[in-house]
Image (cartoon, rainbow, N blue to C red; front, side):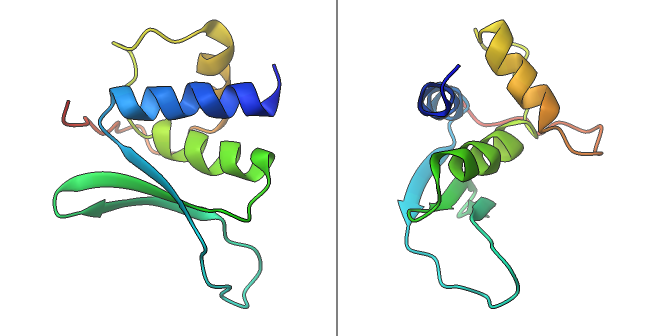
Length: 99
């Protein structure tokens, strides 16, 4: 599956979870490359991604964030579930997004 398609599917999954995704110019930290991540602003989850990031970097950032949520109730393709599984961190606890 092309990275552009995976990114679109991830954006859809984030939307279903009530996670706002935005692409913004992020300042360089001087400590390597950082392409964004998940945060909580005024009680709502957001994923902010550097708009200069490549499609693959965007997929990694968004998949890593979405993988921290319980997606078991979402209708996702097997391929997308595999992408999320590959980006699941060591934490066993899944966040529950406000829908």
